Length: 362
Image 1: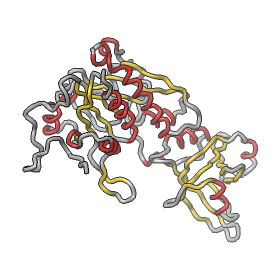
Image 2 (image 1 turned 180 degrees about the vertical axis):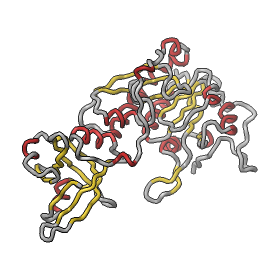
Image 3 (image 1 turned 135 degrees about the horizontal axis):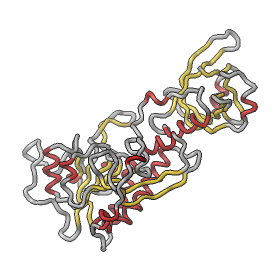
Image 4 (image 1 turned 60 degrees about the vertical axis):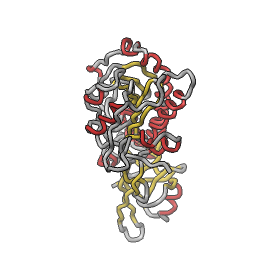
């Protein structure tokens, strides 16, 4: 069974890694490339690189992988390697060439990394800051796949923030990594139109898939140095930021217009999701019970006239949807919800479970 190791080249007689005295190389003909990534979307890029490197005419080989350390995931909260590490091991990638440093600037890691003599590094949602002493090692630099049209949406959550803003067009950029956040020269980019209902996980997967194709297409120019000559500096005056999402942002406020809320549901789909507090009113005795709902799937209601006939805080049911009155005389149709600790259910199943009780926004 393959074991994931913290660093490569562990000594069997000691608990700390030994630094190899000679460069770690797979072959003498192909240029060593190191890939950095962590979540599931990174596996798309690694898959493309491994497939391209196996071609007889390939200029490079994936000499090592750098990813986040194991963490507690899933229901059992067991220590698990990152999704990228799991994928690499499943593909038979050598476990002693998967690095999992806490920080990319650690001296022991950098010594081992330097011994690999990497020509180029590729990053795709790695999740750690790369210091100058890391960036200075590969002579061809480090290239990042960023899921936005840089300089737009620099930062940790470009896809989520773009959807939250309701943009109709986004894309993916291939850019050299510099110390400033996502500010390096752009080698190439790909534009994509997006529909009104796509959610963040699906858009993220699509953009990294397109980014993988873009990377493989541009790798020859990166290796021969022409990419650095053609790369375009970013216009910092046009830059926008995409800060990391927090769980505190997940609450929906129904005084906002339905389109704003719908975009937020799409943007926060997956993690952290969107939540709302509703009130269940017993018609018989007037007893009120506050309930927290996770809002899974929504659409903007086209039947605004009917929503104006009910009280501003009354939630109704129509055509398979819970209809929430929103700001600006708009209405949001909620198609799927989830109670704490329960499975996702459609709106009809939830409404039937109320057994005639009234539902109101808080």
